[in-house]
Image 1 (cartoon, helix red, strand yellow):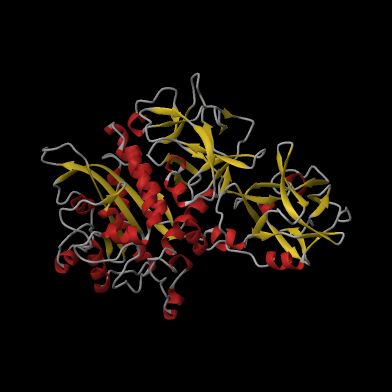
Image 2 (cartoon, helix red, strand yellow):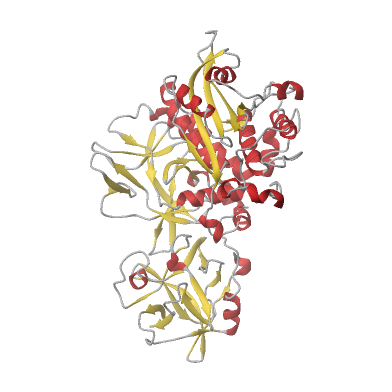
Length: 581
C-alpha cells in the first residue's frame, strides 16, 4: 500500500492541514493538524480511505448514529472514527466531489468541529473544508482494492430454546454481539481494540493433544515475508456450507462450544483425534457467520483459480450457438450434450495424467478427486470446444503427477486443500469419519467449484445411497455430479476403507461414468467404458470395480449453473490475486 499512499491535505480558512490519528477516551478519531507528520492514506475503488497503523488497515468510518445504515439514526451529528477496513460496511465508502469528501450515498458532507472530522444532518453546520488541489486529484484516482477483510459475528444456535448466542473471548452472550474481522489473505480472525487501533487474532497451536481454550494475540493485515512464514498459529480456514462454517486452524483442529454444563458457551479448540470422545454436553462445531461471507469465500477462491498465473484463457462462445443457449447454459451443459470423440480424447488425457504406483495428494484430495474437479470445470466451461492441451487446474500429460502442475499454477488453491485433509487425517474413531469426510468434501467442492451452484448430500449408507444413485439415471440431461465412494475389499482380506471419486454426467444418451486415475490406459480401452448406464446395477458395477469391493458410504456432489457473485460487481479477481502474493 505504501506505493500509493499520500498525505491528505485539508484546507480550512485558507490554511492547509494534514490528517492525524488521535486516540481519545478509548476511540480513534481523524483530527486535523500540521501536514508534517500527518498520516498517509489512499482511497480504493470502493471509496474506502485507508491507512496502515502498525500493520493494521484502518479506514475512515462515518458514524452509523447519523447515517442509520445499519440501525437507527439517533443523532443529529457525530464524529467520524477509524475502524478496521472491511468490505461489508458502507459507512466506510466515500466519494470526492468539487474537492469535498461526501459519504457514498451523497447525503452527508464531511466537516470539521474542534479539529475533528464529523458529519451532520444540517448541511449548514460549520465548519466546511475542502481538499487541496493535489489531494483532490489524488483521491479522485483510486487504487485497486487491496484489503478484503470482512466483519462478522460468530454465533451458534441453541436449538432447544431456538435462540442464538454470540461467541466472545471466554463465553457466549445472548444480548451482546462481538464483531470479528476475518482476513482471507492472512487467515486471521481478530477482535479490534479501538483504544489502541490494534487487532488481536484468534491463536491456536500445533500441540493441542485433546482440547484447549481459545486465546488472542496481536496480529496484522500487512506482514513481512518472515512474519507470513510464522503466521501459521493465526491462520484459519472456513469450511463453509451456506453461511454456516466449521472454523479450522492450520493443524486441523476446529472451534467448538458446548451447549450445556458448567462451561457451556466457552469457545475452545478440539483435536479431531479427540473430537468423538468429547461428546458430553452436546458440543457444536458449526457456527453462523454474516450472510455474505459465503459469497466472499466463493469470490476469493474463484479469483485464485481464474487469475493465477496458470489460469487458461476463458472460453469464447460461438455467436452461432448463442441463440440456443439459455442463461443457465451459457457456461454449462445443455440438454443436448453428447460425448463427442474430441471430448472422449480430452477425458482420456485428463484421466491418464498420473503415474502408476505413485500415491500423491494434497490433504485428502487425491489424484482421482483433482481429476474429477478438472473434468467438471472443463465440461461446464468448454462444452462446445474441449481443450486440447493445458487444463483448467493442471496441465495434461500422460504419466506425470498432476499435483506438480496444479501446485505450481495455483498455490493458493493448493493451500486451501491442505487443512481439510488435516481435519480428516487426525480422526482416530472410524465411526466419526463419515461425518467429518462429508464436511470436508463439501468444503473442498465449494472451494474448487466456487463459480458454480454446488449442492451435496450427507454421507449415505447402504440403506440410503441406492435411491440417490437411481435418481441420477432419471435426471434431466445436462446434469453433472462428482460421486465420492468409500468401500472395502469384498474378499475380506482387509477392513480398511478406500476412498475414490469420479464424475457422472447425464447426456442425452444416458448417464455416463467418467473414470479417473487410469494410468497408462489406452484411448481405445478408456473410450470403450464411456457408455450409458441403464440401471442401478450398472452404476454399482462401476463404483465397485466389477463388484470387487463392498460399498460402505457414498456422497453425491451436484454441480449446477454458474452463480452471479455480488462481489464480482465491485471487485476484480486480479486485485485479489495481487493482494494474495
